[in-house]
Image (cartoon, rainbow, N blue to C red; front, side):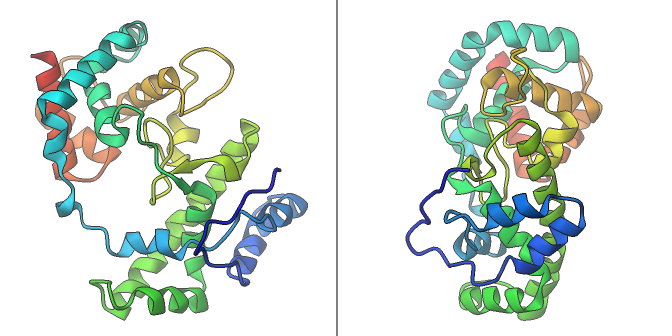
Length: 272
């Protein structure tokens, strides 16, 4: 593994990941590999990034930006550019190309904004909140700006840490399988990655090699397009699906009524 620079202002590890490393080793990961990975200079406790989980408000997101004439024009160009992949996907998975394009538009602006936060650091930091002293440290940093009480924060942190630990294990499995440096992958503040913004568990379960190069790379457009189709089909997407069923399936991709509605609206504009 190549060393990486720690971003300015990042918190040093200061033992925050010691218990986490122990858990990973107990769960079957190589002691030498885990210790070497967490000893690297680029691995750090990302308090600033994870604090977004406790202040993020979806109501502040401007979903209407994605139905502007400019956005729809770009999405139509994207459809045309990747027509061959979309044609194959519609035949194999019976998932509308306009729905897939709408998802990619909203998730990453058609693959142009992929997130800049280390997936390893994000998931490791959230997973480490299992430990009360780590939880208390983060609370001291965000108490002044968080809309939550300490009790609400503790409850949410406990739930998120359990979820993040599971995702971290899947991320390390994926990185090992595809021979990827875990520290090289960046994504959202929530730990989602690639053009489709998949969480690691969804990569292992649903991601596909869309361009037949022998790798599952969610930063490749063909792989991302086919992977979204695979995911939606798994959750029940069918040809000529009605809006009510489509809405429910989209909630499995991103549990947000705003999100599901805007995806359906974009798809209709792309078909029009």
